[in-house]
Length: 195
Image (cartoon, rainbow, N blue to C red):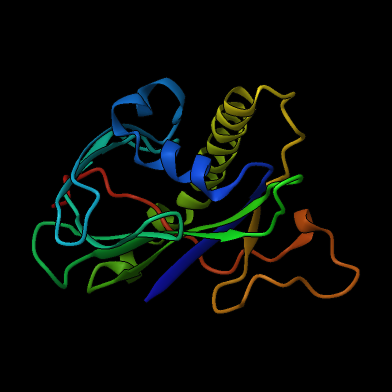
C-alpha cells in the first residue's frame, strides 16, 4: 500500500469549494489534472474522469463513489483492469475553519493505492503529488473567485498547498514551514485505462 495526501487552506466556505468540486462539466476550464469529468457524485454512482498527469499520457477512469457527504467528503475507488491489480481510493475531505466574516476551508486531497502492481509502479505513484498540488491550487482559485462573486467582495489571499506525510493528521512539527513538510509516499496514474 502507498499513499499521498496533500492539503490546502482556501479562503472560501465549504459550500463554494464543494460546488466547484461537483461542477464536473466545468472541469476543463480550471482543472489542470482532471480535465474531463462526469457522472453521479452520490454513493454507489459511477464517475467518468479523464486525468492528464504531468508525466504520462491521459487516462480515463470509471471509479465508483464510496462517499459523497455534502460539503464534507467526496471519496471514490477505481481499479486498473481487474480488482486487486492496482486499486486507488481517492478522497477530498473538507473542514470548515472559518467564521461568517472570514471563511476558510481546509482541503485534504489524496489517494491510497493497493494491489500487486504497487511495488512496480513507484514512479507513477510518485508523480501524483505534483498533479494533486496543481489541482489544489486551481481549486482554491476557482472556489475563492466563486465566493467573492457570490458575496460581491474582493478575492481573499489563497493559502499554499502542502504535502502531508502519509499516516499523519496534517499537523506540522513546531518551527516547520508548510513547504518543508515531508511528503511521505506519493501517488499517481497509469497510462492504461482504469475502471
